Image (cartoon, rainbow, N blue to C red; front, side, top):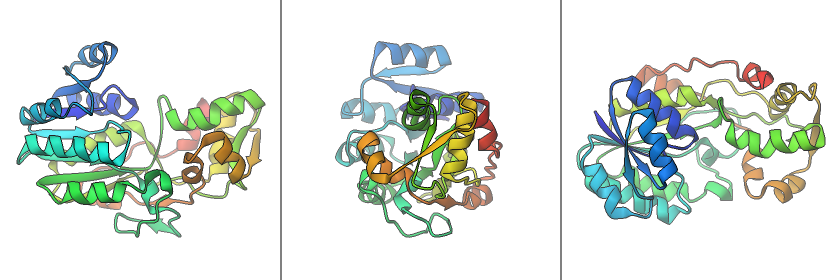
Length: 281
């Protein structure tokens, strides 16, 4: 397939682009800077100059493709929907794969699947209306990734590892008994490839099926950071002051299942020991 990708130079995007090329797909990727274009080209794909606000560029690129994978993070729900609409307009009958996230479910009160009720923190409350509109058109698919790890560990590194190194202990919110539904970035990349064959209107949870507690993750990260397992509890109010609105997402208690993607797409996550990955640093 000829696949147009947004966010290809980002954390998920680099892994997804590599997986697409490995599976024999031809990739064109949106690049908003010269550095991003160079990274895309060096990875073996063709850069398309522009950003998510360049709607004519998105429509034209999608029209040249058989499928679109939208990974880039928009600044708002309105911007995300505008970009999605532009690409769906150009794509026609091709496969459009949109990115959501498991945080929209809030606390899951057990193991959740794709049909669990939504109870999102304010940070991601805008996603529902965007996804509804996206799924109402053409051959659209939504992937809702869990909290990512592997390679750069962007969110966990930024909000936990680096601050923890400064104070000598990795923080967790409250008692840390809440579960995080994790997925390795390389496994998630393979799910995006598999989603190119999905049925129209499908929604899949991109999770690894292993949901350690936040305290277990903090302890493993502490070992990986050379802090000998030292952790420290911080209150949710303190976390909000340090992290902003994302603190409420990190405080969620989430357990999710990848069963639907396994049954419908044959996707089986290979990375099933996230704590070992964190502990290696």
